[in-house]
Amino acid sequence: MEQKCVAAVDLGASSGRVILVTLQEDHLELEEIHRFANEGIHAGERFYTDILHLFQEILTGLRKLKQGGHRIEAIGIDSWGVDFAVLNEEDELIGNPYHYRDAQTSGTLEQAGRIFGERGLFRETGVQDMWYNTVYQILGIQNRNEEYFKRAQCILMIPDILGYFLTGNKQMEYTSASTTQIYDLRKKKWSENILYELGLEERIFPEVLMTGADKGYLTETMKKLTGMTEEDCPRLIATAGHDSASAAYAVPAEEEQYVFINSGTWSIIGMVMDAPMVTDEIYEKGYSNEGAAFGKVKLVRSIMGMWLIQELRKCWERRGKRIDYGYLTAEAEQAAPFTHMIHVDDELFAAPLDMEEAINAYCIRTGQTELHGQGELYRTVMESLAMKYREAVDDLEKITGVKIRTIYFLGGAVQDQAFCQYIADATGRRVSAGPVEATAVGNAMIQLKALGAFPDEGAQRELLRRSFRIQCYEPKETKVWDRMYAKYCEIVKR
Image (cartoon, rainbow, N blue to C red):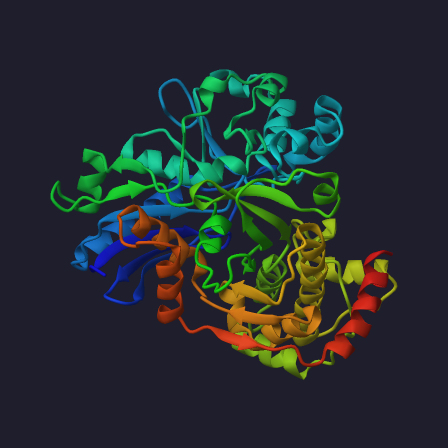
């Protein structure tokens, strides 16, 4: 394969990175060029995403690439879904984008039920009713300010607004659009019915580009700010803008049908399919249809994930305690197993100011004692996550009728070997762990495919297996975990 270099801009809930990905003859090489913080900003009573800070850091990363002598052919940007920015008639931001954890969505699920009917949005779009979806954010804004969208000329998701800043082109990528719960995945178009009920004109929602499409080149201003010239200016490619869709494209699977878990702030569990499944069973089991790369669909369930650990670390840092993962995993290994169990998706954990207090409040509410010590807290979260994965994987197997023998586990949590073994033991299935940087890898793989680097999907997966260390875990203590799962189910129903 011909050597090619691309830049994967990967924005997570706690940090962002600009990563140089180089396709050598028979493998991929990753180099982190720039890492930066990305945390929501509390200001007054609102919670925002600092979009200009993110953009400035992306420019810094691109400058570092240029200064390091790296010549890239393309750039791709991925981020979390659902959040959006609004441009006015002068193509300027109306305001900072609200963060999906802002309290403005409170009560909007019920409001949407009255407007669209029970499960109306799900039946129209295939997307599960989740309190943070774009449609509920829009309702929350309208409840506070009826005039807000009167000035709107264009709505763009986070990767797309950043792409607009770079190129001046207003477009939205398919997987990003799917997270709005306004985009009909079956018809692959904006839902006229939903827009009508929201009182929004379709013209403010831009053209939806398919994954892999060309989004254009940097503007003259951006070339100057990054040091790029006409000769070495990369194109912006519409990678899978929704980070979980990029991660799902980095699964080194050997099967045609497979289950993946992308473990980040959210744990995304699912399968990639050719078409959406819109049934009552899907809805009742908490599964959703979301866009997957190149027009496919992910049947997925979103679980709160490493958010709980991230927030615990913030609490402990404020209290002057150690928060490095090596220390925490060692402490967890010394803690007794199965002392407490929590429902990781409980509303107490959505956006608490103190996660340790929230977990202890949950334990008291469910008839358990308070937790003490970092190791005990860490272990409780990870064991409970593994239990939740079991529930989700069992449901997925029943829904699809596909026998699941291997779980492809992706993301930073694959470095926690004890957690990987928990998953294997809890689910009774083999766990294939890696790559760690799945989202950035998938982001880059999509760019490389758009650049014509691969003949087919088989070649892509083979490249992934050659490029990254994939560690496998076989189930061991399944009988113990089966007994504990029964206890877990009893506790989370309280």
